[in-house]
Amino acid sequence: FFKQKTAYEIGVRLVGSEMCIRDSPLNHVAIIMDGNGRWGLLHKNSRNERHKAGLNTVEKIIKESIKQKIDYLTLYAFSTENWKRPKKEINYLFSLLENFLLNKTENLNKQNIKLKIIGKKNFSKKLNNLLNSVEKKTSKNSKLQINLAINYGSKFELINAFKKLHKSKDQINEVNLEKHLQTKNIPNPDLLIRTGNTKRLSNFLLWQLAYTEIYFEKKLWPDFNERDYNKIIKKFTLVKRNFGKI
Ligand code: IPE
Ligand code: IPE
Ligand code: MG
Image (cartoon, rainbow, N blue to C red; front, side, top):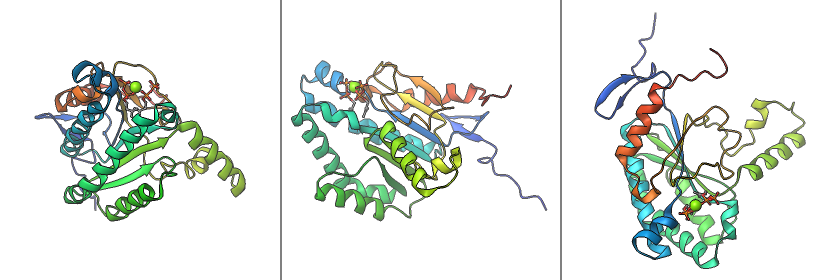
């Protein structure tokens, strides 16, 4: 007999406090969290305060993503090009990341969140171990999957995937290539948000974003909040996604 479809499956989600029917369900949101530096200069005049403020936004957006029943949240935290920044800033960023992971792993578990790292894990032994252990500790969680992009670059990812595909002798096609991407088994993002009033992709998920709806947000990442996020989600719900059809 017919299995009754849940509201979730037909794309009915809570948007803000209103019920609305989505043209396409929102399963995966990717975010380029840009504007921390400018925020720091504007508000505290310190390069380091900025990234701390950015972490508060991360927590808000995680909570709201769970409320909105989003399955995957991909956050761009550090690109392969960000190594060109001053050493002091890089060190600070990584110490912030380390502290976040050390202090928040229990919280992630309580909220039933799975954390996956995308990007090349070639950091210090200590950080690599920490990242592996957080991934392992949260691997059974099922409410929300956070893909944290650190030392991530799309071109690097693609070149590696092509190399592996070539070596495997499998046929070169989309499905086989995707098996070698870091986002293997993760559906492509439905929605990409870049904060910080800059309109570019900065080497983020070039393959995976082929049909993603893109929103460029003027606000700097530390100023971005749940309301801004919900506004974008609402706009997303109104878009008819064609995928080439009419
Ligand atoms: C993005 O914020 C975060 C990282 C790259 C780590 P920025 O630090 O690039 O902020 P702006 O663009 O300089 O304001
Ligand atoms: C993109 O931001 C990377 C992250 C948000 C982690 P950048 O600030 O590094 O991007 P560009 O260099 O301005 O393009
Ligand atoms: Mg920037």
